[in-house]
Image (cartoon, rainbow, N blue to C red):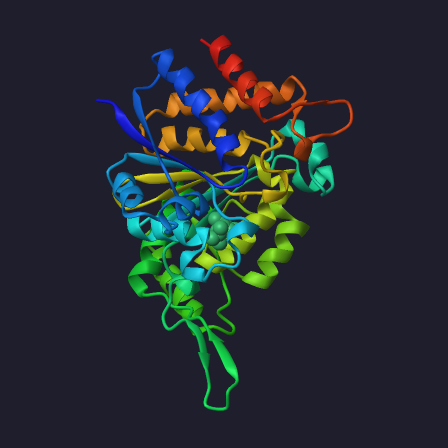
Length: 361
Ligand code: IPM
Ligand code: MG
């Protein structure tokens, strides 16, 4: 039976990069490798402009009934003056919460062809292959109370609340232990247990679960040290698991190790295996509409979609191989350009990946 994929291009470079990912999906469809029905919807600023709401009910309903969602990016300066509740980012957060996408997988893999594009020394990053598992529906992103209030003195006070229940911690840690078990069996849980009770509980739960996963070596690291270790010696990590806010920050940091944030895909999964797939970079309004954005993170997100939600791991691997071949050909968008390579635009990379897929039969 065909699987339903909802396409949400969003804002900024979203439509350009998603168009290339859709090319890949359609090419695989015509070749008979997958059986999908593509639907389109509005989210973020694009939805606000039409409906006055960054997450129209129609979009949420379509996402809930899809097997997978492919999302470009949301946000941009145009919508910054809006109140937080109407900002494009709320569309994204609403989808995460509305679909219960608590497990966010953010792999940071260095393609050997891009070693010169990293700002770190080759010996520090060569062979890098780590996975950040970020909790995505809790923490200070959603905790109550929140807001800006005015005190009797007239001074204003901003409030957000870091909060996790034991069951929320347990379910994300189980995902991370399971993934670590299938990789190099090392799990580093990142917290700030020396200061924050919320993460003291996190650490306690992690230690309790470790007994059930004797083959996985569990370690703990404070988040400030983890940020430092990621740039000092990133290859010490296999799987890192952490809360929503720390995961947001550490995953951007990990992304840069691979040369460009334009290379990194992500999967956000719920308990039913439904998923939303998106590049981890944002809407890059500064380069939107110029046809120079790197579509690879979005195309690799399609590969993750095939692996985790559409039950087509072999086709996922074909996409990853095609990306690698295109890098071998020396084609580069400006973000990963290095001397001696050929600089091309968004569509050329998409076309080259489709061509590489066609050759690989
Ligand atoms: C991310 C982004 C989002 C987040 C923003 C756009 C709301 O930075 O997916 O990492 O903070 O989670
Ligand atoms: Mg982020």
